[in-house]
Length: 169
Image (cartoon, rainbow, N blue to C red; front, side):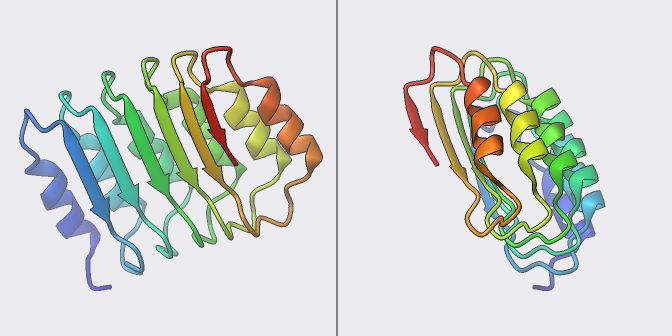
């Protein structure tokens, strides 16, 4: 709970150049903001292949932070899991930011946006439109996102590529 942007920035700046696998959990860090996400994204090494980040209940994170984080994803990343459950400021624009920044060779993607009440069908459509063709495994969690409807699922489904082998919603 006491972690701040400064600590996350220091960690991001100190990651080794040859790091291939990184899992970090920052859940319930109420002092963490978009600036911390941006600093972490800017420090991700190019060698990284597997990344899991958990920001559940980080209430000050928005689509702007997610956009900067995604912009810093290494091109060779193959596995990505992001958890933004209960981040009340996460919106459709956050899902749209994912669309433009996912690495083209990404094979595994897991996203948890449970209880993000501002997400709508437009966000699912944006995500579906930007999934990389290399994606083989997709796990999405949108529990208790009450503004999502069948139309959003249909739009997401329309964006799924033929190479997808595993889907969990």
